[in-house]
Length: 168
Image (cartoon, rainbow, N blue to C red):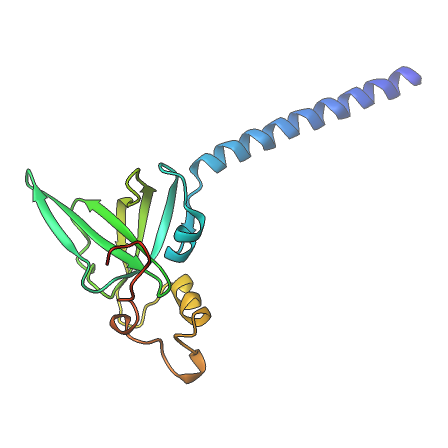
């Protein structure tokens, strides 16, 4: 009887070890493909490491869009803001048709060594009433908008602020 209990214990331990290894490998694989979402305020506060992929969401700051064409390929630089901070973005390629100043976007990419967000992909949202949730929260926290008093202010009324060290 003692030998049967010992075998059962080893079997349970072996199954537990296998399950732990499977969970560990799954989490490792999942975390390498996970892309976090950050608002401009969070980017300024956390200073993500260059090369760390994440999604940057906010509003394209009015007056910051500049496009240069090199070898037939457009490179566009602009700033994304949430009303409290703004982040410089550079994107090489064709932008979505809905991309414009004062419009909500989500950009996927990473910070580069020069402190710009190098976007690999830019997604633009349509509709004049669209506002990313994090931007909405940022406006509320900054005291720039109270939902009890109506819709959010137009982007061009709050997204042109000066940011320390931004040069704009």
